Image (cartoon, rainbow, N blue to C red; front, side):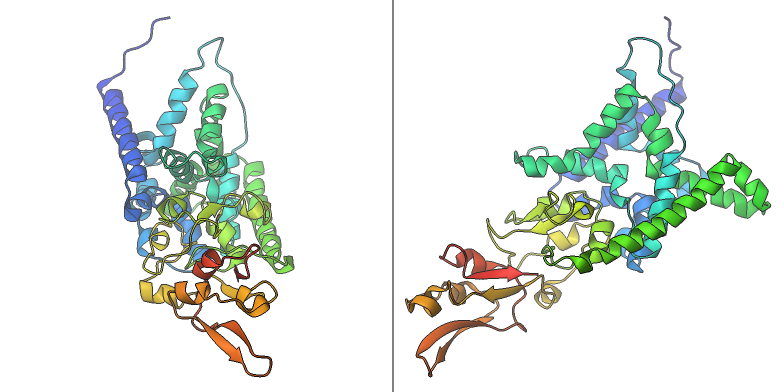
Length: 397
């Protein structure tokens, strides 16, 4: 079968898309947090929902403004010329050459995802923000050369799943599922409606049909109900995870986090890890802190500079010192000094904040490490240094 040769415009478009793909890969693999944060931050889907959920607009949020303005003027320009995920899914669809093309008729799931997430953002919990394609791309590409641990590799599964869907059902992701593309459609549509000042019936027909408009309203209602229920869930838990410094409160963190993996890769001690469902399905693959390999360095704030959605706030070193992630708790029954009256001052010596001191009790002639909660930021240095097993001193959220 003869194929029509590409026009110069198509060649130019392909070149721009390839350049955008290379630029996206470079941004993700560069070691500087400000580079890694840029790609997911370009998404207006992330920018709009995170700004509404966090009730603030920061410098990182403004990175999505150019793509947002383009969507208002040229519908899906970013998808056609600059989206790295779009080029990969298109090429994956072209690999399926055996047999006639499979036609799949699906409703616009992408619009429902975008509207559901937007409704959740109004309550502080953008439900499906992690489905942003730029975040999925960043999470997967950023793993190359970083780790071989199954737990961390699982966080990059989103991109392979999207490519597999595109292999069997070409164009389905971009046209019917992708929330970033749907957000651009909704932005273009909102400008068209505002310009023409159409009636309510004309607005419904411009989206596609009356049932679609009713389903869109249903998606908004579902997002609000779902978010309200999810926000109440952590209050019923007895144990909560320890999040990176500067994180928003636990009920909103799992919603704002886009699972891009930037904070995990930025951590020099490797203590930030993806949650594998230990704290519920809502926080799956969201970052949490474990102190098996090290502690949160007192002179490091790289993770606070790597978040594109505002789930982790940008902190100075002084702000980090006064923003605790947890509190050290001592079990005197396990402590060598308190229980066995043997010499040990590991936690006192290692604490970089001078938050632990040994107090002598004159009544029973025992010495016990005491923790000052006003000084302890929960960095985990004492837990790592403690020689007992199980640990006599641990960090609790």
